[in-house]
Length: 343
Image 1 (cartoon, rainbow, N blue to C red):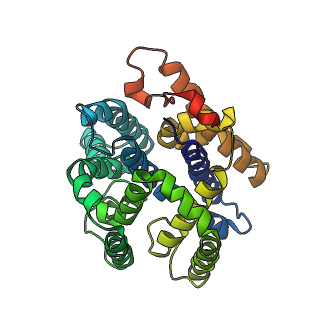
Image 2 (cartoon, rainbow, N blue to C red):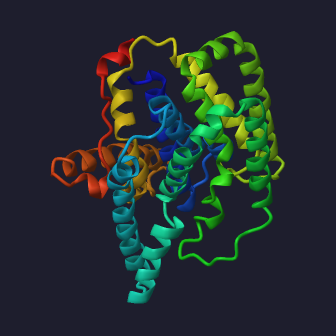
């Protein structure tokens, strides 16, 4: 059975990631987008939402434990594409810098084992696959009343300290930090998603009952987030402690809103189903948008966002026509039971 809210949240999060990087592309080319920093800050719930979605679906689908072959299938459908795109990324980065063969292999190793490219998210997700397999029984017996505050404290403390303390590892692509990878930086989302997914119906009832508190949480977290960015305490990033409450409030709000929707639009389903490929591939299509950089930043932004979404969908659709195409760009995610989407 599919949870219709997940299609909306995955779609919105996916589009937000593409928009964040499209804005960054425009800024890198000498343009200045008005209020770009507030916009980027408001979209920083997107990557944490993917962590939430991943564990929510595990807890919802496998309340009694993961089935046989669980990791093998995910290695096949998720990790192999991560490796393939990591190699392609190393090739593209190496061609731009005219590096040696040794530098090329260093890039490959950094991409695959240290998450030194856009696919770093996969390494985080696989940590939680393993954690779910070994600790779901513990979480099912433990009370969320102490698990959630403790995990919030652990994650918040870690995200605060990595602002000042960085792991001394030199990576080929300095845009991606190794301190993003440890699961403790995402632990709260994992624990929260587990309890929400495990008792999904109860979770929706609680959201409806305490919706006004949810609105207050959203307003408070939003003001805190924008205030800290404006004052310069943190740069726009999903790896900061004040994003914890903000992401939680956004996810709760989206569940609350879309739990009342009777039918999921086909465009939402399509983007959701291709979200993994979009996440992995979108940045490699941005170069097409640079043909408009001398015209206007608005056109460059629109074109970058458009090709960043449509390009990966087309490539993934074509490549998945081949028997083992999913190993290159990821499998197209299709709901097992489409009838549940309109319930």
